Image 1 (tube, rainbow, N blue to C red):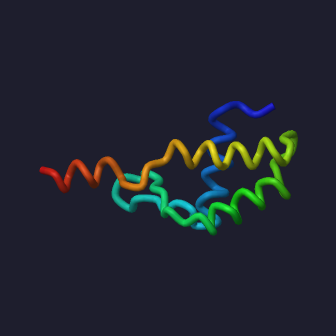
Image 2: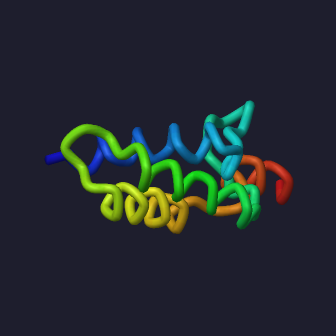
Amino acid sequence: MFDKEALEVWADRMLLKHEVVDECEIHGVLTDNLDPGALEEAVEEARENPPEGLGGSDAAKAVQERLNEIGDECPGCVRNAES
């Protein structure tokens, strides 16, 4: 069984690999690229190649849930732009 943090790290890697998200160069925050095609690819790979000990549907769900926690703007950059 995966702990929440390990599963999030794995899901982040999957999202980055398929360019579903980018990492802010300044703050290191992940941001959603709003690319549904890339998300489909990431979810499909997660389903087909889940980490050891996790089923394909659970892996796919983890990727989707992780993306739901990620915004489309870096909060640090948004705050700096408003200053």
